[in-house]
Every structure is written in C-alpha cells, then in structure tokens.
Amino acid sequence: MNGPGKNILVTAISGSSEGDSIRRFQELANSLGKKTHHYALGARIENLAIRKSVNMSRIKILNSPPDKIKIIRRAAIEEVRAEAEAFRKQGHTVIWNAHASFYHRHAFDEGIDPDDIRRLSPDVFVNYIDDVESTTQMMSRPDRIRQWRHDFFPTDRPLWYPIEKTLDWQSVEVMMTRWAAGFMNKPFYVLPTKANPVVLYRFLYEPWRVTCYFGMPLTFLHGKKNASARRRIDALKEWLEYYVTVIDPRYVEPISQEHLRKIFYPMYDQIPRRDLWWLIPPCNVMVAFYPKRVASEGMSHERREFHETSREVFTIYPSGPVSPFFTFWTDEEIFHDEKNFKHEFLKWLGSAYLRDVKRANMHYKNRKT
Image 1 (tube, rainbow, N blue to C red):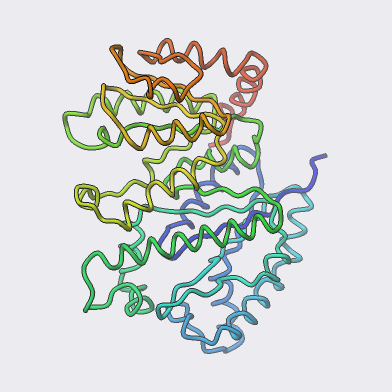
Image 2: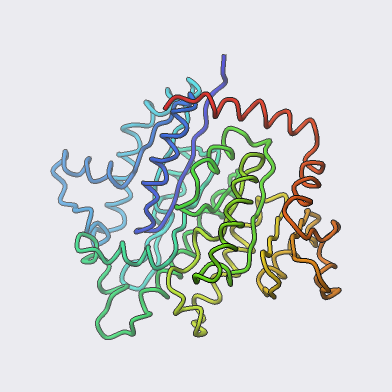
C-alpha cells in the first residue's frame, strides 16, 4: 500500500498562467497513474462570497479590506480541507494554488496568511514565473486591467513602467514563497510556467533523478543564421531529458530583444538573479553548450557558480584555443562535440543510476493516453 500523498503549495503573481501549468502537470501525472487534486484559492474565495451573498468581485477583490479577504480565505480553505486531507491520506497529490503576495495601490501585502500556510501544511513549495512580457500582456487584458490600472498601467508613466513593476512583484512573490518554505523546512522550486510538466513530476515522484541546468549563450536564441545552432541545442536537451530533470532558462527569456539591446536595468538586474539564485539552486550539474565559438558573460558566471559550490560542470565548446579562465571552472575536460560529451556524461551518471532511468522510463512509455 502506498503511503500518504503530498500537499503542494503553488504560488505565482497574476498573469503568470500558472493554472495552465498545473493543468498540464495533472494531465501528465494522471496519465502515469497518479491521482491529483487542484484547489485554486482565488476561485474558491469568489465562489464562497457568491454563495454567502458577500459583495466581493474577483476582478476587484483587492479593494476589499484585508481582514475581510483573510476571513473569507480561511473559510474557503476550511470548506475543503477535510476533503483534501482525505485525498492526501489515500496517497493522492493535493495542489493548493494561491498568491504569496499582492501589489495594490503601490504597496505590497501578503496574499496568504501564515496561519493558513500552517493549516495547509505543504510538503513542497513551488513558485511559477513566466517571462515578464507575457505576464504583463495577460494583466492588461480587458477582464483584468481594471484592478491593475493605477499600479501597472497609469497613463502618465513610460511604456516600460509595467515591465518594471511586474519584475518587482515577481521578486517579492519568490522571496515570500522561499521564506515560507524555509520557515517550514520544506523544498522550494522556482519553475517557468512554460516548462515541460515532467520537471515538476520528477521533482515530486522521482526525486532521485539528477537535476541539470542546461545553459547556452543567448546569442543563439534569435535570428535565421542561428537556426542550425538552435536545432543542435534542442536535440541535446531532448537527449538529456531522457536521463535527467532539465532546467532550461529559455522558457523565461524576454520575448522582445529591445530590452536586451538597450541597457534596461530592471530587466538586466533580474536575469542574473533569476538564473543564479532562483533556477540554479536545486540543480546538481550544469551542461554548458556552446554550438559555436562565442563569449558569454552569463555562462561564465553560471559555470563558476556550479564549480565553486562543489557541483559538476560539463562544457561543450568547439575545438581551438580558449582562455585559461574558461577551463578553470570545470573539473572535466572541455568536450568539442556532443558525442564525446554524451559518453562521459553517461559514465558520470553511473550504471546503477542508468538502470533506474531505464526502469522509470518504461513507465512513461506505457502511460495512458
């Protein structure tokens, strides 16, 4: 008989599309025989308010007094907590979805009460982030913008203002979720909403898998001339995903290059923070892939971060002379093509690990569709 399941607390700022990520994760988990249940607290608060004839609209909920929101949120949790706990005791995974923080009228406030977090008793904390432009576009939709007009879309501010404020809120949401996870001594992950749902699945159900940060120079993410390089990057990532859990920072890169061609400090400051302090911490190893000879300041810092925190760095770089500073941040040789790298990477994973991978991946192959 399986043991009890897990409570997962998922947080995200508005406009992050985390609901889609949760749905895709549930579809994958259910196809692999896992039972999952999703409780979106925002929708449940609104539903409870309607049933109790409380004047509270979801698109303007932040205009309500904080104590009123807190009371209704607690009542909404208590309505379903017994049901959720029964599911968990049967070995099911229970996903609670809430905001850790709110940004309203130019001030931050808590999105969930610490007592409510203790009641939910999460085993894992997950914060979903989307690229900032997609998030801002979602928040500016007609059904959402009224609540955020003063905070994010004032007519007397520059065009980049919504981007800056969204980045601020993302940082606070990550910080508060990480603080709650640390206070309860539980695992914490920051995941891109566009990431493959297998990432969360493996964190929850296959924690034995190696977690790999897959780095590549941003130079190759754009332009027709780099199409073949991108195909090589995608092919190597697909190969890695068979064996390990892959964290790919491309899922949260800015869509527009305008913010990277010019020095836009809110964006510039956020990218190193996101990669070095949010995405990299749960990773055991970095695979740094340079399809062409090019310098990358970001990759240099990421390779050094892994090296100096006693983690492994595998680097694939075309043959030719390189700086001694380039070779310094790895204990492995510099591989000049994917074939040699793959051979050494599988040796590093080890035969016992590869047997576990083969056994686990048969489960994927036989999943219900």
